Picture 1 (cartoon, rainbow, N blue to C red):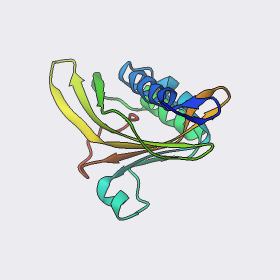
Picture 2 (tube, rainbow, N blue to C red):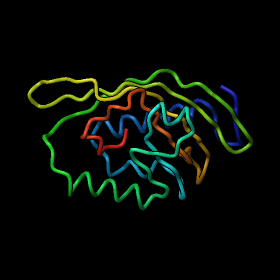
Picture 3 (cartoon, one colour):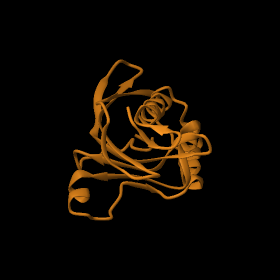
Picture 4 (spheres, rainbow, N blue to C red):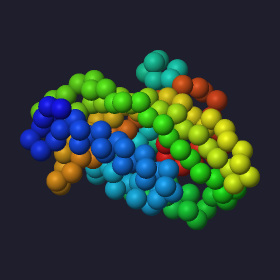
Length: 160
């Protein structure tokens, strides 16, 4: 794996993507904002909107305060039946790189399991990430989640 910027490698960026996913799947949503720079962009959109360069987002956060607000809503305001998520990721592909930023894409599927054993395919799509090295670690400057389907489950309160 080659060096992208002084101190960042593709392997480190892939580790960021993996660690992020385990944080979500392990239910440690309060740690989710720590994977992003300040300011940042976290956006969930559909494939159709992305391909047509439409700004419509299902979820849009453009700073860490908005991410922490989403966490608070998940942990305190939203009421839903207990459940678990499990992501399965493809290998990440380097799309572009500059002296300071690595653009990577990763395909994913996310399965939701309810406590009664029901398992459903929750979401499929890809991540389009802008990853930088800041304060001694890799962070997302931008994570755009591009869903394959425009049909979105109402429980899309969690980050994907």
